[in-house]
Image (cartoon, rainbow, N blue to C red; front, side, top):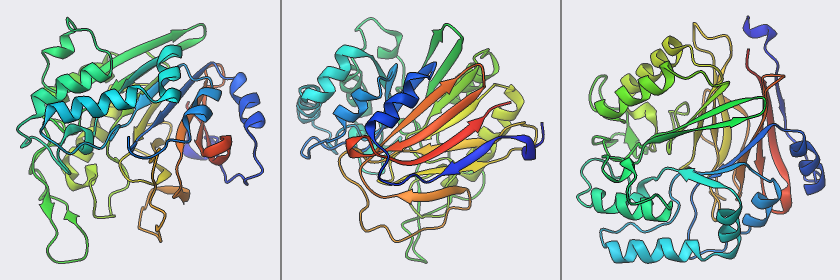
Length: 341
């Protein structure tokens, strides 16, 4: 199907949108995924009640689930325990499935990657937080990448959770402009590491799911802002594009966080009959309130620079997903509708 025939609608909704309207829309969805990132334990999270009201089937942590920045595992463990005791989050844990990844601040080192010496110990604390059983293979695996399928009456969602920290090689500081980071030379370094790349290839190539949701803690498409992004490893960006196209996996979507802003990015890969959407949702407790603009050649709509979380509502019969950025009191701040066929 040509791109001109793909139903793609962007609507910026006013603040008169109510929680009731949101609930009515979600009641008709076959499956609801909610996600978010950038959550400080020393700041109030006003969104847990709104997240609960979307009645998600799964909550996905997108990274920076706490802000520890430490190699002291006792400190890390105590911060995770504090988050577990937050009333709204505790209710969510009791109600639905919880999965997700980490990013640098809960990994333990700002902008950290393979060089972080306490990564193995930190991984165990992360898995404790995620209530992963002590006999799970994830306890012996290097990195927190994993996948899970959700089978419902009318279809299947395959969630593929990446680890963009454990294997990620050094970044290149930008000493020539006011940007913090610049892209590595083409072919230099890795985001995922070869073991995880091979695993991801297997996950996508063998997936028969109706939708394949890839969770990346850092943005995949937006690549010109000078912060962390897949774009700092341009050869890895191209490798993922080739893999998605070659795999012929249906309904591939990317979820990302990290940036303290929320936005939709979209592109069209040659060989795919639908656009790829990178939905960034950040942050839960604090946002980039002073945001004044940055380039993103793939952006659809406007940047949301207030506290928010993301929701995906899946409709299997229509092969459609409604993407929503939701703020406090259930206000839908921005919405994107996409048909995948």
